[in-house]
Structure formats: structure tokens, C-alpha cells
Figure 1 (cartoon, rainbow, N blue to C red):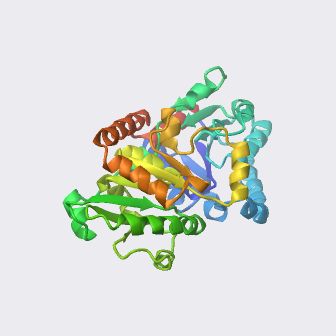
Figure 2: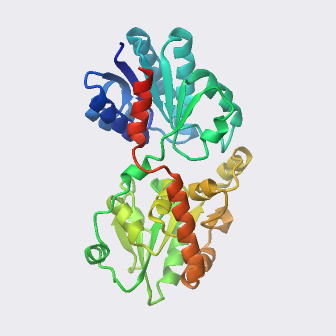
Figure 3: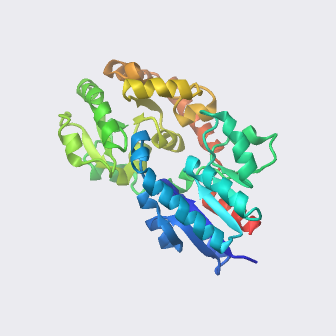
Length: 376
């Protein structure tokens, strides 16, 4: 039995997912050899890297063009190594465009090698025609959203729902009283927290509207405000924004604690919206990009909603304030709706609980490792 398994991840998030799979894989098959494209976390778990994920973590269209040479080098390097080693299984994590091209080459040159894709390309959002390539070049698809397997119900592919890996990351370290004491908050006031984003450019776009909102909401005696600062964001980004002194800036190291102990979360569309569903905290979703990017996205994306809880539920649970709808007045209106209507607030919590239940519990990495074992 060939116990060489290749695992490839093109982004930091994929590096984290891959490290969990490797840990479970080595626990079941101690002498398995894992090679591929990985970063600090995957190599720490035992991967022998033939290329480093850190060299591939570019965001945005123009950055991808600029670094096309590095991407081509990674492609050639890992393909050459796979052809030489003839692994029994290749596990490809997210990074969809890169991986489907790699899968096509592997299937042509090593038709017996099984290819597993972890994290389904977002065909439900755009370019549904990609289903044809997914079915043709992947042997197994490990989905992390509950509605994705239904898209492949009539296709000849081993499609598995492994649950969302965020469920394994949900962990609070501070009780409510301890949290309030640590960050100088009152136990008697409702905490409204803000997650403005994890990239400098988007945070700077969101802060002017949020600053105006903070100034207006901070006049209320029953409210306190906290903003979560991602490790990617410089401290001066918040300092230069001239926010009211009442706003507590808390490191994203405590992101789960912030969400758990907040009455309402205001969050940029993205992963944080799903985290609010896991903590069952009613939220207001916002997002603002440059007009050209928004125009292009509107032409490509076909989903009615942009936040994952709403997409999973198939209806609006949390309001979405996008582009020109993202104003301090709209934020205040939605905040008041939640603060002044206990029935609406509890309904939102219950609906978010149903979304959380649909996420499949814990153990996504273990289930993907089992899929790899099934194909070795």
C-alpha cells in the first residue's frame, strides 16, 4: 500500500485546515508520509513541504497577476513532485482555480491517483458550470456547508458533508464577569461589538460610518461599545480614526469571548457572520467596496444574500447593509429594532440556533482524514 499522501493548501486558512487533517491522519496511520504545499501549521503537524503556502497568500485580482510567476512555479514544483512520488491520494484544500488545473494534470498523468477536494468551490454563488469539472476531476468532495451536497445529488461523485471547521474553533476562555473586569466593561450595560474586517483597506472604508454610529449610540446610558481589532490591522488604524473614547479596542485573540458576551454584533460580511451564528448573537451585517468592484460582483454573484447565516437559512435572519445602505442611520435603526423588541431579538437568536445546528457539529478535520484513509 502506497502511504504517500499529498496535501496542498494555497492560503493561510487552508494551512490551518490541513494541519488538523494531518494530525488525525497520523493518529490513524503513524507511518503515513505527507508532502505538498503547506505553511507553518501544516509543517508543524508533519508535512514535508515541496512549496510554502506563505508564498502564495495573495489577495485580489491585481495581486494574483503580479505574482503569477510564483503561482506558476508552485504549480510546476508540486506537479513534478507528485508525478515522481505517485501518491495514492492528493488532498486539495480550497484555492479552487489553482487546484482544478492541478487536478486536470494529475488525472491525465496519474489516472489511478485519487483526488479529494476539501471545501467546495462556491458554485452556489457563481459559475455553476464548474460542477462538470468538479465531477470529472475529483473523486471525493468534502463540503463544509449543509446545502452543498444537494447540488451534487444527481452527479457521480463521492460527496460528503463534513461540517464546518469553525465549529472546532469555538472556544471562550473568559466568563462574563471575568470578561467585563478584564476590559473595563459594565455587567449592567448591553455590549455592542463591531468586527470591521481583517484587511486594512476594508477597515478604513468601514470606519467613517462606524465612527458616526459610535458617536450617536454612545450617548445612551445603557450601551457600551467594543471594536475587535484583527492581528492584521495596525493599532494606529483605529487610533487615527478619531473614535469616541468610550470605544474599547479588543484584540481578535478574544474574538469568541467578544461575540459570546455581546448583546448585538455589527460585522463585516465574511467568516465573522458565521461565528455570530455559532454564538447565537443577533447581528447586523455590513460591507462596502469601491463601486467598480461592487458592479462586477453584482454581475457575477447570483445569491440573494451575502452573509452565510442568511444563505444557509434561505432567508434574511440578520439585516445586510451593503454599499449605499451602509449608513450610521441604518445601523441605528436596526440596533433600536433589536434593543426595543424582545420578541424580535429572541426570534433572531432561535433562528441563528437552527443555523448553528445545521453546521454539523465538530470534527470536520477528522472526517476529511477518514475520507483520505478510505481512498488510500
